[in-house]
Image 1 (cartoon, rainbow, N blue to C red):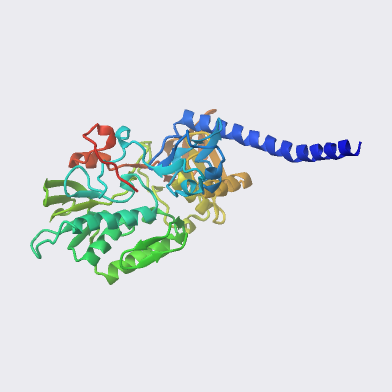
Image 2 (cartoon, rainbow, N blue to C red):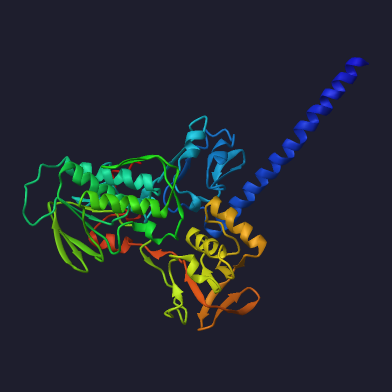
Length: 441
């Protein structure tokens, strides 16, 4: 009788521990499956750049990759295996791969022969056009650390082809883009004694210039040429820009701003870079452009009004205003969060889909809290149809809506520079070119 009592207590204790765990486990798997189906139906499971590559035969479904991902719901478990539930949110941290105990996952570009947004590159980051290289997010990999590393690698590959004759009208290399990748390439050129010119259609900083004030930028440890290590996990926009500008001044980098790339012609060793300011000759060219390109307009009436902007510089300027933010990506959400932190401001976030699925987990947590508190009004499944002097018009599931408005911020992405690269002659995976080499991270 005593043994039966002991066994009964043990079974009850085991059931008390196991049943809640089993119920939570089943609920989490149902949520993963539902999220996977939802993002697949919305077309958001497809990657933008790099993404997790999963070996389903090796995966044991332990979920360690999910717990390690800083972005939240990039991965899930469906049918006992890890699957991509929101590939558009992956920005290439690689922590999922580090956490996998059986090596069933890595972060990469996959088979680029099916992708028309990834240029074909050699292991040295050279395109199919001899002498033209690509570095940074244009090649598909996000993160400042990747851009810095690729800028350095591209310039080292160029230097290995020297020595080059001194003087003359040709630069040893022209770098197009003054973001982290472009400046890393220029600093490496300075370190290796190459004559290098940097061109950019705006000021040094690249995509970082588009960020709101005090935005934190997530980086992995990386060594900046002629500077040293960036060891912090996060830097503010102002800190990173301060580093770029200091390096620019200290090493007398040759940077021309307000020059937009129009074309690259010429022959290997004698390339001609055509810009809005004229022509430059170089032996090699490094394209360190961003993927965003020119801000995309919606084409709605009133979009050319002075109250419409495509980036947020200083949220404090909009105190006491009624603001509409259009978009469902990180830039739109970050702008809404920044403005909602100001006093006496009404912020409405309009997105054409019913939910915000592309954004980073940190941004999702912030915007969810602001929506719940009423600091931000989320207008999902709506589209901006007109902009008037004191109002805006939205198309909603229940019909047209007119809201009082002072300012409109549109974050609808950008027109990427892919057509320009194709005009230059750069081949992409989806072009079905003669592809033999795939870039390695």
